[in-house]
Length: 240
Image (tube, rainbow, N blue to C red; front, side, top):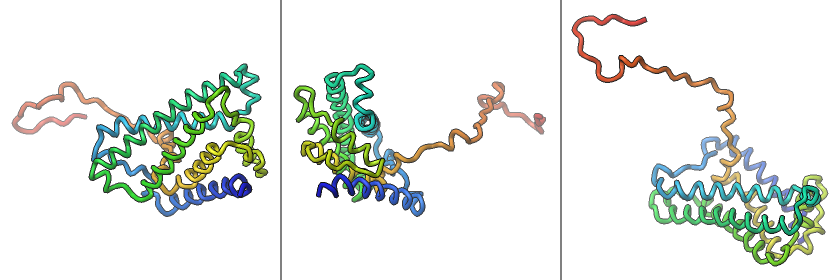
């Protein structure tokens, strides 16, 4: 079971991610969208959407730093384990609360607004459950081991995550990891596999073409032509 969870499941999630992205791009380009429901309701969306997006961006940034910046690098920069733990604890919790708050507001909006609820698919419901579970479990794991310097996942989970890129996963590093962190990792891998098949696919869209498209030229009108034009009889002289 350990070999499957920490040696096979990560690659299975990655294959489903890549295959799903290829399939969506090849056969469902018009579905590659967030399917925005702003036309139905915008007041609550203007609060919930920024809260969720900013929160999830900070959460992702924290995971990238925690998993892929070795502990020796932060020590060399003069950051002690205690300082790193406090920053991770308070910063990660704040980002998680912001993201969870945004998700709950989005769920409330979808459930209380009939047109928005009718536009909600089964994939959307599954996505919300897995996404909320992943963030909440990460917060629970962090807060449960908050005493002292907390659990140093940079000596177990982080090296395991980096070993996946060498195609030689060090599954033994995950053996002594607390159960809450293990559950969080499994839900995270499930979320990665689910991304291409939900509206979360839009995170892989970037308006790169805007960097290379021609400029849009706006020409101002002659101030004398602004406002109502006086009526004139006969033919008018055309300008050059």
